[in-house]
Figure 1 (cartoon, rainbow, N blue to C red):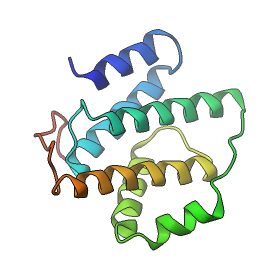
Figure 2: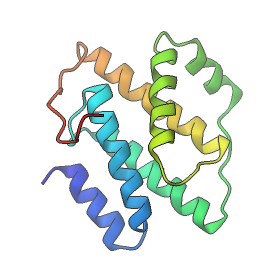
Figure 3: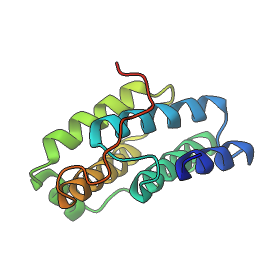
Amino acid sequence: MSSLDERIEILSSSGYIDESGRRDIESIACILTRECGVSRDNELLGTLITHVAAALKRSRDGEPIEPLSPEIVADVKASPIFQEASRIQHELLDAMEHRLSQDEKGFLLVHVSGLLIAQGAMGGGGEKRRSPCAQK
């Protein structure tokens, strides 16, 4: 069992996410392992998944989140990986049963950008493994 599988099991068994949230989390993990070339043991992937779980809980509880600062948004948009990160972000959002607020979508974009940048720093896939998820 990967560290991500353990994390998802804890989030689910503790009631932090419901079954629908778990399906969203699993879909996101599958897409990111395929699109970013990260393993299910990647700590940045775990962080992103935990953020999405928290976003789902905030949405369920009606709790807002502080938006990203304009400087962070500008940095992400100026990044050479912005187009790819944005494409992946949209794929993730389309795969989800739940809808995220605009502020949560911004955080998701930052996390996806971080994964892509980290993979680039590792030579474009230092942890790349074949994803256990079904290919679309």
